[in-house]
Structure formats: structure tokens, C-alpha cells
Amino acid sequence: MLAITLDLDDTLWPFAPVGERVERVLHDWLQANCPATADRYPLPRMRELRERLNAAHPHLVHDFSTMRRMTLEHALADSGDDPAHAEPAFDAFFAERNRVECYPDAEPALHRLAARVPLAALSNGNADLGRIGLAGHFRFQLGAAEHGVPKPEPGIFHAACERLGLAPAEVLHVGDDIEMDVIGAQRAGLRTCWINRTAAGWPAHLPPPDLEVTTLSALADWLDANFDPPLPPRELP
Image (cartoon, rainbow, N blue to C red):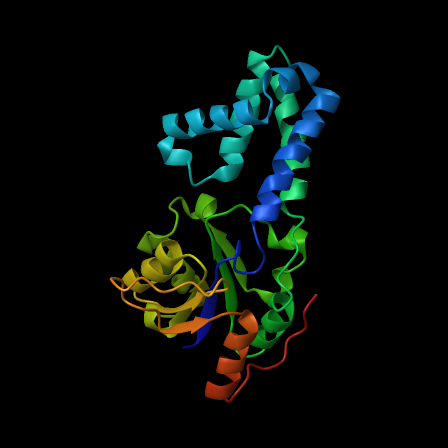
């Protein structure tokens, strides 16, 4: 194993608190700047609109940012507000989306992992590691929106391996989602590590991951125990 690709949401930080906050922040922004839209589209109705648009544009459902902008444009136009407000509304949403609180083990473990092997972020979400402040640990970030196809499709895993200059069997993918991360990476030929923070049971009918850990610190411990030579030190921003 010569490199690691890492999922982001629910692997480095819990997503549920972020998901709950961003909807409220966006609605508050609309109330302050586009009250007609806020009145016409309270949170439940805005979610319904987004779900309808997702169903109407299945080829874009992996591109969360595009779909969020589209939802805002529709809601604004339908309410008589200027659709040009969609971009500053999205900016307010996106700033909050990237205000995450990492699991306590995540950042110390990233330091340790990156000292031994190259790391790459591989996510279906739209988190921005630069805004979050974690980009310095990673060689690159590859998202489903950028690639055009989400996990668990093999293409996005293979694209990450190509950018790392490695064969799939030389890369370990780490993530929390059984289907998107573990099974998807297995089918693409990568080694796999399930980060199981909830102590859930592995489904008996599925092939198990190569590794199972409860924290990223445990993965760093495993790497320390099994791989002696670290990479040459590199400065982190």
C-alpha cells in the first residue's frame, strides 16, 4: 500500500450537524435579503423543491453545488425575486457548509498519515478542504462534481489512482459508507479500510474490508506498525 484516499463527510467530521445548520443559515439569509422567497419557501417546501429538481435532473444529482444554485434560482424566480440573488445566497450557504468540526482524532491522524504516504481526498460531497483548512495534508481533492461520476462507480477511484501514479491495488481507500466507500473501492480494485465510528456490524452477505478501525488514530497506529520508512518530511502550510 503506497497511498491513501480518504472520504470526507462522516469520515473526518460528522455531517449531520452541518446539514442541519446550513438549511437554517440559508433560510435566514433569504429572510434578510429576499423575504418573499423566504415566505414562499419555508424549509420543508425548499427541500421539496430541491427533491423535485433532483428527480428532474438525475445527471446532476452528484453535483450538489449546481443543484443548490438551481434550486435557489427556481425559488427566487417563482417568488418574484431576482434570480441573481442565487449566487450570494449560495455563498452564504457554502461558507456554512465548510464550517465543520472534525472528530478529535482526525487532524492529528492526518499529520501522522501524511508523513508516511501520500493522501488524496475522494468525496461525493462539496466540502472545500482549502476553506476548511485541511488541504495541506492532501496531494489533491477529487470530488464527484469535478469527475462527473460519483462513488461507488469505479471511474472516480481509478481517476484518483491515476493522479497518484499508482495501480489500484497499491492504494488504500478509507471511508465510513459501506456501499459508497468500501464496496465501491473493492470493485475498483483498491484495498479498503472501513472507519466504523458507531461500532456497527458488518453485513454478513458482503465481502469484508481489508481493515476496520473505529478512528483515524487507529489507522495511523496500524500504518506505524506495518510500514517502517516514512516519506521525506514536507512542509505543511
